[in-house]
Length: 468
Image (cartoon, rainbow, N blue to C red):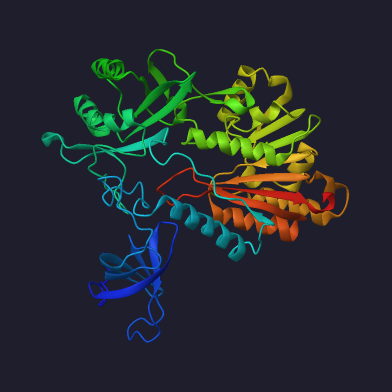
């Protein structure tokens, strides 16, 4: 196998002025046009901040960009901060801890603004002020990697990956996790070492619920070989000692089952709407419960619901938006790609005595067409909350309804609230809605769901032009 020769520039040291950040929180600069080797080339330097003059060593040199290792900050940005966590730089979980919290918000808002304009060629009538919540201890759902460096020496690691590689960080605490989870990390290493299948445990998931102010923790141990009776007793003793619920997962998500106690049920509440949501520890839920309450409240207010409204909730998941919407609207239909999640959403509708106002269907929404819109029928309002890939098929179906200029025009809802975890795909879809489907973009803004990371949670509100 032939290996590419390293660039002759690799290892060379340079200085550069940083002018921006990318979505991985790397500083972005540009070499001067008179640079003899790489005129005008873009340079990415991890750990550098906008406005800073830094000295770096070239670690990668491509035709269109360079990557560099930060060696020295010659002129520091005023918003640079000492990282809060001792593992910063070794753990890849939080890439923005060296940045002031307010500056993090401003940069994430700028990412949304730039993507909307440069990718979607749209600009909202109003940019909402960024919404922030707790900076630390906010992560109520997490997936930890397990790696055996040397079982004989007892060096099993449990944690997050190191920056930009497959290795797991040698960490024994985490400040974005709840305190009890952070303190649990060293004990998880010991637990895995005690198991007969210790070299076949790739990951551990933790999920937290809240029942009447009492926090609940469920742990899911993924194992690739069957657990022995002794293994199961070890897990049960661990669960009792640390006051958590123990679940196991032998194969895919369908194999997740409760080990101790024999049955357990996580839940979280949305107090503004008087509802309680039930979920399994591997279900998708927002990691930041307090920000989720704000997100749901804002989205439903922007829908401006009336008692007679018929509402469509696309990518509905376990009913995070569907169920609270049903407390106001006449009817809500939730559609999700997973039949299992649809069943969970229906369970939540029954749990909150709202089953008569809700209906749930399983459908691959990445393949949605105008024919599907016709089958679903007309709705007054839509809520869209897709994964990172966005809702391109959905917005193109709306475009097809618009260009038909006939009876399908009214399949387009009056209002769409679009919740996104990827500003780039939101911007792409917003471009279709505004330029090709007959909508205006009235509001957009970010919610800091993931402080100290580069992830951006955002919301956009669209109105059908012929209703304004």
